[in-house]
Each structure stands twice: as C-alpha cells, then as structure tokens.
Length: 508
Image 1: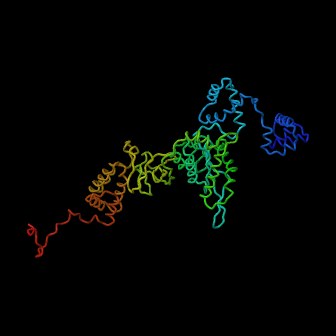
Image 2 (image 1 turned 135 degrees about the vertical axis):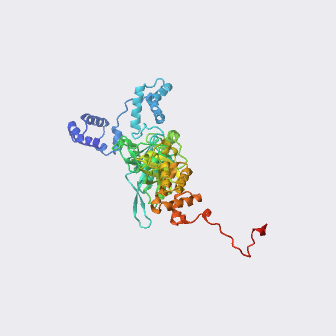
Image 3 (image 1 turned 60 degrees about the vertical axis):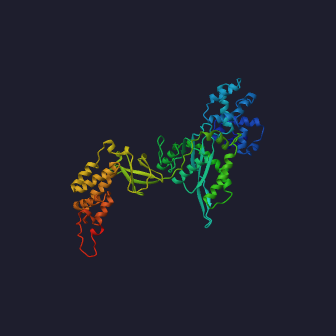
C-alpha cells in the first residue's frame, strides 16, 4: 500500500505512467490499473493518502470475478463448512460432488474451484487450509522476549517465549521459560501436547540446537534427547529446511499474532516469577484461542474441538523423563557399565570396543552409537548385576573374541587347580557366560599382584565358603586370610582331664 500511495502522489504531480513504473518498480499495466481505479472512485488524492494501509487496501481490493447473484451467495455460504471438511481430508472434487447433489443447477467443477480459491484468499489470507487435522505441530521461540523483575534488586530479567501451534485448527500454546536450552525446549513441547490433550503425527521444529545437531536438506541429524522425546510420544520429527521460511510460516505467523494479542495483555503488569508470568500468559492465550477468525463464525478452540481433537493420538500414560547422558566403551563381554549404579547393560556384540552414548532416566537406559539407538533396557539400580538381551551376546552368534569361557578356564588352570574350579563355578552361575567375563578377568589379573600361589589359596578358601565374586577374592588377599587354615584342615583339639569335666558318661 505504500507503493500505491506513491503512485497516487506522483500521478497527482503530473508524472507520466512510464516514469512512475520505473520509480515504483512495477509494471506500467499495474500503474494504469491503480490510476484507473482511482479515477473511478471520484475521490481526491489527499483524501486517499490520509487513509490507513488497511483502509486503502479495501478501496483498491480486486473485484470479485463473479457478480454476487443468488447462486453465488448460496455457494459462498457453504464454504466455511467445506473448509472444515478439507482439513479432515476431503478433496475439492468430493466437496463439489456433494454440492451438486444438493444443488443440481450449481456451478461446474472448474468454476467451483476458482470461486473457492478466490474466497479463501479474500476472506483471510493467513488461513492455511492445506493442513490436515492431527497432522503437525509447529514449534519455535519468539524473537521478542518478555521480562521478569527481581523483587529484591529490581533487576529486569529477559525470558524466552516458546510457541506451539497445530497446523489445522491453529490452536496455539505459549509459555515463558528462562532460556532455550534443550531441557526447557523439550518441556515446552511436552506442555504443549498436554495443553492440546493429544499428540499429532509429526512435530516441526526450527533448526535450533536443542532439536537439530546438524541441519541438512534431506536428513537432518536430531539431538539424541529430542529424538528420544519424539519417540516417547510416537511422533515423527520434521525439522524445517534450512533457509526455508515457508516451512515454518505457520508458527512465524503465530509469533506475530502473539505480539499483537498476548504480549500487550501480559505487559500491563510486572511479574517476579516465571509461574506468575505464565499464569498471565495462559489467561491471554485462552482469550486469543476463543476469538473468532477474521471473516469466519468460529474460533481456534471451536475448530480444534470439532475437527482436530478427534484426529490426535492419545497421550502416553507417563510424561517423558529427560535423560542424563554418559559416554562408555563397550567391554569385551559386550556390556557397558552405567557408573552411577555400577550396573551392566548388554550391547550387540559387534559394537565391542566402540565408544557409545548412554541416555538414561529413572525408568530406562538407551544406548546410541553415532546417533543410532543400538540397545534399550529397563533401568535396574542394583549394583554389580547384569541386564542382558540374549540376542546381543557374542556366543549367541558364534562370534569369537579374546574373552571366551575356554580361554578363561585355560588361564585359570595355569595358576592352579583351585583357581580353575573357582572360575568354572563363576562361569556356570551366570545366566549368560558374557556376564561372568569381567569378574573372571578381574580375578585372574590379581595373579600379577599377589602371585599365583596366594591367588590359588584365596580361590580355595572362597570356594570352601561358597562365595563366588571378585570382591571376595580381593578381601581375602587384602586381609591375608588365604593363609588361615580351613575348618577341615585344623587339628581336632584334645579334651583335657579335669575334675569339673563330667564327660559323656554323665549324660548317659
């Protein structure tokens, strides 16, 4: 509309159409069209220049392609309900067929499509009718921040604003958070899902680091925690293409609308905590979602309840627990150790020796290699125990490594017969041989420190008491208990003769 004003101003000053075209950077036909409309209005240039952009746009809006007769008005009245059906997956042909059944003398298919397209563009250019109900949720952070005020120091603290919007109904969720870190971003996405009361088929984030490690046009690399969150909720992640603003136009539109509807309402007061700020945001958000769309007789909430809520997947029973991360090396028994619990979890044997990422929370342990999940286990906090998937084991696949039962027994026999029998017992007491390999390796390594004779004696003593573990052998060696005679090795004491000792005959 700024160019329209310039064209009108130059025309009133007597500038020719060709020069106006060059100055404004538009075609001569466009200049002629605006001047022709201006001449037909019979209004002064000063009067038009005083109008706002919106008022001026209404004056110069393109005229409908069809005269508004009774048949056209009847069809246009049907369009709002048709638009809802399109969001449910109806095609325009199917809508036209239903229309012709009800109105046999109505428009043909081609005219029907043209009139619908013109109506959709003129009524509200920001409505995206191509989005299917329950299909996508778009998420992003707003560029403009909100503020908290420290009640003690008066310091103004800027906070981020997270925004999520459903593609079809455009139901919107807004939440303030301290920063854009991964934990806050994922929690905002999760809160949005619970606000909507269901899960769409896909989530479309921008290429922020909390979601995408490496941008790529075809296969972007997702942050492992974000990938795990998406899998927990059964969604697909479809990051917006780099430098593709149209891929995230919907959420950017929601951000702009928030600046004019939610921000002004919230900024009327000051807030000392994030909780107070988010309560105010929620009040303004409800008003925004319940406000009618421009040119339509329904709101985002009404459209959501009618067409999108039934299309959403149900929420899982439990919220997602954000996971901690550790790096571990897969041992030769194809297990990794979660140091926090000192518990061992199996990994497929062909990853032996590889460094892997371990993501875990209260409930589960997931193991990744080069951003691919290779194992998943239920978390067990009990120390020095094994959680093993039999399909991961090397023995299950006849895969030979440096650690095998035969090699451990052979090494133990070189130390002594007691060590050999002790190692055989350890290997037999585990559900899977690989679970005992690390214990065997630890015991046999003690020969270099304590000597073969002491280790053999320690194994004999431990086996006598039926205690099979690495810690038992270490304790015996540290306290030098291997030199102590066992009960069956001690001489039977002789009962002394004394007048106070009655003897067995007394009790006969």
